[in-house]
Amino acid sequence: MERNMSSENILIVDDDPLVREILEEIIVSQGHTCETTANGLEALNCFKQKDFDIIIADIKMPELDGLELMARVREMKPGLPFIIITGHTQDYSYDRVIGAGANDFIRKPFTTQELNTKLARIFEERLLEEKNMLLTRKQSDLNRRMSTLIAVASDLTSELDFDRLFPLIVGKVTESMSAERTSLYIVDWETETLWTKVSEHIDRIHLPLGEGISGRVAKSGEIINLEDAWEVPYFNREFDLKHNFRTKSVLCLPVKNHSGETTGVLQVMNKKGKDRFDADDEELLKSFASQVGIALENSLLNEELRLSFESSVSTLS
Image 1 (cartoon, rainbow, N blue to C red):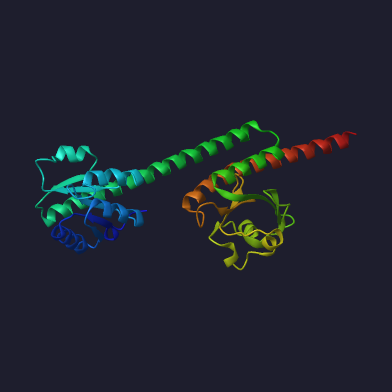
Image 2: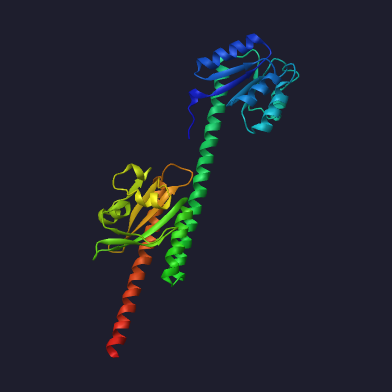
């Protein structure tokens, strides 16, 4: 999530009350909030009680100097940005301060523009780092999902027992989607019903087309993505109440054959760690539905061949 630059909380540490006042005035004028402390030990105690986005500290202070404060704080929150301020430039050079781990260095006296520029640079660098971390996580998640899809495709070509194949696929869907449960429904257009081919942790379910979330998806071909299933009138709560379960987020979409006909419904429930399934989850489940559609079509063809063979044997007999 991108930060709001106007909501930064900054801790000011300086034993000179005039410097603290000037720093606070500059920071507040830029829309930030801040706390002021007179020495390193006071600042350390304040840091333990509150959360700060950046610390601006003098070097030479009683109790605990700026560099020691930085080392102590970084033990608790590694990477917290520090700007070190000093008027003792002969004792503390830029290279020494930056080498100790500070993000930037300001010599006294300083200007408002100089402080604002350095703050803006630190905020921008941190925002860029957060974006990079987010992209890295997304890439890692994408790689994981692609690996799962490849594994499912491999199962489709290697597993000939469809009674074993579908539970295998459904289990991988649940894991990859970070869901609590997944159900695969088969649509019977002759009887206008659908029933669960695989349903995790529950017994087989039969529904008329158009009833409930899965029945509605089977009949209309739409994708339903809900944050809370109990909030829609077409969801039947009786099953939850009977089985002591609470259905919240639901993502449900049709499974189609190569001709575009709906042959089943794939439904995942209760996204772990989030309030609902997002757009990326929809795309992933669509990919799974395509794989399942192939398996269902092959399963039906296999069943037709078996019935045809048995009929031929019966006729010959």
